[in-house]
Length: 210
Image 1 (cartoon, rainbow, N blue to C red):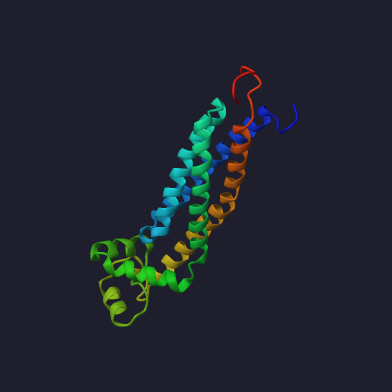
Image 2 (tube, one colour):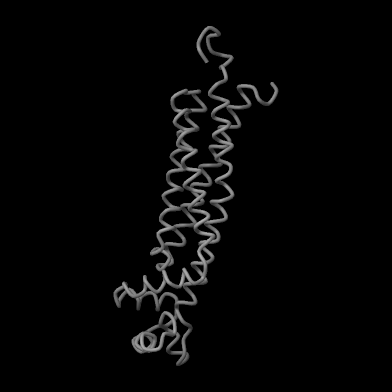
């Protein structure tokens, strides 16, 4: 059977939804890794990417069921929701890639000063650093109370802000790149679902509608 027939469209749609499931799991895993850093969890975009990953995973399951059973209603809602997911995921991915260093510094500063002292000290021990950025008085206060291991090796420790920037920048670039690349495949999914939905199952009753 030539590609474009019922079986080919069904197999292509099923394969694409399996890819969507893997993409959803990948987005959740990478975003969870970013949240696990502690500081990156304060960036709302990370939470947005996790939400997109979970939603994409659910939609992929619905699309897979609809493709296997040639379910008209399920495929219709699959097309509508997948189109909305594309818009949302495209926007989130562009936001991840558009955040510059100054913006990240602002977010890190705002997050650091709303944390409790115990949370700050825990992060300093985890990342083996002291203080956020060298802002004179706040830095001296943080550096005095810091109990990271680096203080036992040297009187000067690396700033935590520099380490946070390195990890958060890496996480945002990975999230943005992966999300942006796979968001365009969702357009292909909408087109495949639309074509498959309007094809007739050759094994069904010839007199039945679609």
